[in-house]
Amino acid sequence: DPDNYDDAPREGIRRLLEKISSEPVPQEVPLENIEWIRMGTTVATNALLEKQGAETALLITKGFKDLLRIGYQNRPELFNLNIQKTLPLYGKVIEIDERVLPKEEGFEVLKELDIASIQNELLALKSTGITSIAIVLLHAYQFFDHEKVLAALAREIGFEQVSVSHEVIPSLKAVVRGDTTVVDAYLTPHIKEYIYNFSVGFKSRLQNRPLLFM
Image 1: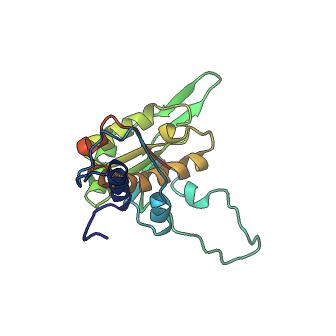
Image 2 (image 1 turned 60 degrees about the horizontal axis):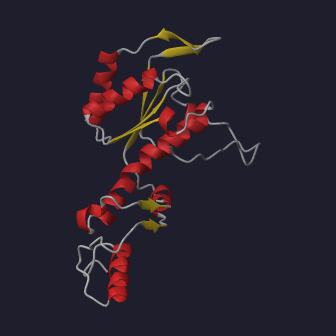
Image 3 (image 1 turned 90 degrees about the horizontal axis):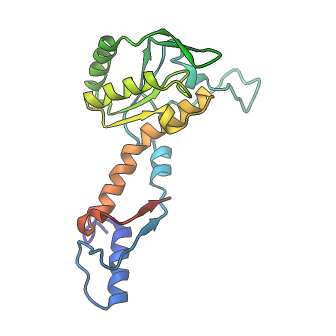
């Protein structure tokens, strides 16, 4: 009922506090009687199903731009020649010209990052309206350096969300790591907005109060 309140769960909490205390509780809900809040929500699931996430781009090792589209080639109908695949969550792909190979101990960098070139590509990308970045480099399950550099560049340029695969899920399997990182980049801005809209109606925006969303 947006004519009377902005957020239904918060209004429910306010009314419950009012009922318990038998005193009026203001629209900016005080925190004296709140120790923590735990809340289940389908906001992320809904955004994923309705394709309402952020405008996202994928940064991936050169030569692997179609890796997540190809995936594991799992097909429910093995001999169907007309396969209809869902569109990816990312709208653009930038191939990062870098190459790292695992050695007996550690990794060997065969191709360093060209920082100036990548910076120009990211600036051009930002001008297209992309707000969220998913960074997925091939051996970043254990070699983090290149992803860290790319993440710092993207944040410096001003992308609102930068999801980095070795931070999201440092899995050896690049497809799993890539898919999960893309979903994180696509949905996190939506979730952050939801949490902000929920917490802004509490005094001090729920500072020093645990808030757990499931």
